[in-house]
Amino acid sequence: MKKSFKAALMVVLCAGGLTAAFAFSKASSVQKAGLIAYTYNLGTSTGARNASNWTQATGSTPSCGAAGSVPCKVVFDSSVYPTLQDYINDQGFTSDAEVAYGPGVVSKQ
Image (cartoon, rainbow, N blue to C red; front, side, top):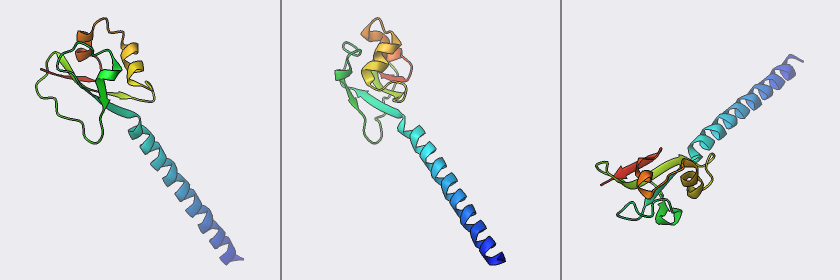
């Protein structure tokens, strides 16, 4: 009887530990998966409010160098903004030049 109780207790503890580890692992990957980066394709700010002028960054995003008036890259939470155009529209930019100074945007010269 004591052996079966100990065995059952061990099974319950192992199952609980695995469940907790899986839940923690899944929560961590969801947080990381939420961030998405885009790099700007043009040399001037004209067209910065158009998502087709940006390319989704894969791997490491480029270094932008000295800050300036042309957008270089943007990083935002895709769980808040499903697309880059949603992010751009929600910021309420009144001109393309404003994009370089928006939240999450790194600019270059």
